[in-house]
Length: 277
Image (cartoon, rainbow, N blue to C red):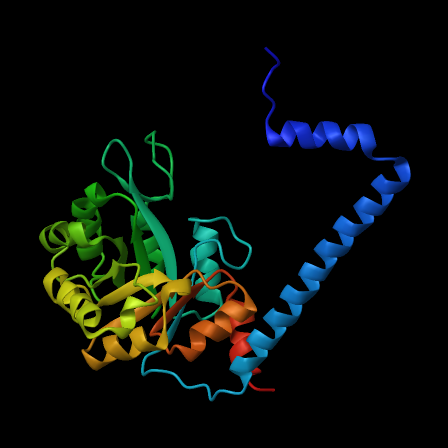
């Protein structure tokens, strides 16, 4: 019984038997032309998409802030250099990731900490930042770090100079228990379609009331002006991450968030400064 061949295998054999060098050359040109055409169409669409925002009036909510994502200004992520760069550039907020060493020491770190030598101790960061007006976004990667983190926050009198992100709805009780009085955003992925319905809007507000969050922290692709207006109407905030490209920044800005987190702080400031020009 002959072996059954897949369509892809039959197609490759067909090409091998029938494609002459001239045809192969023309076929390659056709594929290349198709890819170039697609790139041009996408580029033109992206340009028109970006320029459409320039015609809108730019305005900000009271207290609008820019957060330097850890590793901004070409510094190593979760490093003293990253924090110091945010201070030197007069940033409103800098972000660091929070982990715990096996011995319980609270450190900066995105990935799991496996030894007692990994990560820079958060207490060192607090010693530096408490001398400034800058706030710290503590992105929680492990809720087991919360009790030790709270102890360090209080011992450095940083209660009003920090807030938490990375908190899921089912972790809100841990935050309230282990970090009482510390503000925190709830990580949430809102639907771009359901957000227009009253039932879904009520669901979001009920969720925030239940969890005690000061607002929603979400990827910029899920934010919208409707979501922003809903949150502000009920006294909550909208924070978006991680906004690193110009068209993303323009789209995020017209949605009027309370905070934008970006690795490209200088580009964002340039977009704001040159808006509509």
